[in-house]
Length: 500
Image (cartoon, rainbow, N blue to C red; front, top):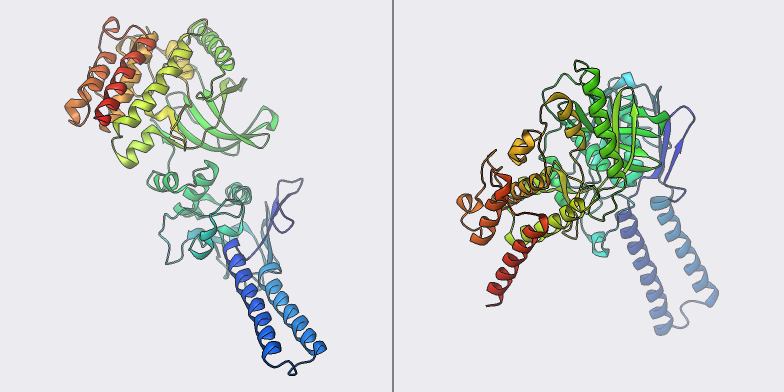
């Protein structure tokens, strides 16, 4: 990061962001403009000396050239280099440095209690869900001539009068993340517009590509909490002596929650589980043993398409798994945004999922996933998938309470009775395939037939999904390997039809 773009933190937690009030698009356009002016000047001097050699003496030409170059460099420097600004955010308030004097009525230091609102606004030429372009994002060369890099704006209005506005594109992504984190830490949440909160979520979740950003804008602001007496921890909470700092709560249900956190400068996912206090000590101890056993198994997993489990710890009677954070859209979000998926894509993802299940089931002892749903599978840019969550915590609570947490329409009947097996994962896999092919959740405790919901689904794939979701486990394919053979036959048949 250049000296004009920097983040400075003090010992008390305050942060100062320094940047220039000229984004890369304007800087590039000004460079091109002044470059063309200089070339035009040189061309004029060349033509003049060729047509009228006696019009100007050599010293005169040199003087004109030097003065012109100095003038152009001066203008460029004034516009593109000297437009420095800085914002300091501390517990006492906000201080605006080097600029915004007039718009702030020459009162650059403001207390948080003086903040009326903090909003994200857009130029009229942009849609209200247009994804921003930050200073450190790569852009194609032709973006210089488009609206890329223009807006949206951050607008801070004050009760006592005055305001400060600047483009998000002036900042790098880490600077924007620090700015919004400090606003949330010190400011009043009720002063933040919904678009500001969604923008912060997009930045923290690294969902700034057009598809992910648009999908995020259509989602609810609230984390996906279910009715429960369990209360998740606040966003400002730190774990393990400050090693893990919570950035935001992603969701909660039953007696568990999921947080996005930061550790050693990298984002991680914290999965938290709490045992109800009204169960017996013996049940609590048994459930903790089960959780610790499965956590130790998960820590040993090394697969490129499974989010790594990085750590496990207990703090204040709450158990935590630390998982690798994988940015991107889940299959559930993809279907919600675009509807049912093409069969060729479903076959590709299905093969990858079965290979992951084969890897898990071949562990010693075999490791069950227990929570295979579209919400726990992320699609990366290269169309590969990553499994981002396990059902260890859900099983952990379920063993103690006798209840099952999660989407029951993806859970095998025997798993609801506490008798999960490898074939239970195959049931969940078949239910997930049904959802991808139809954009409809499968019926709980029922055999899924995607072709009955969507006639475009091939009969062979529909039959495979039906066999995977049989009510009785022994009627399903005997293993993930057997299911994969069936899936490969369907894919081979589909490719032959395309060739014909």
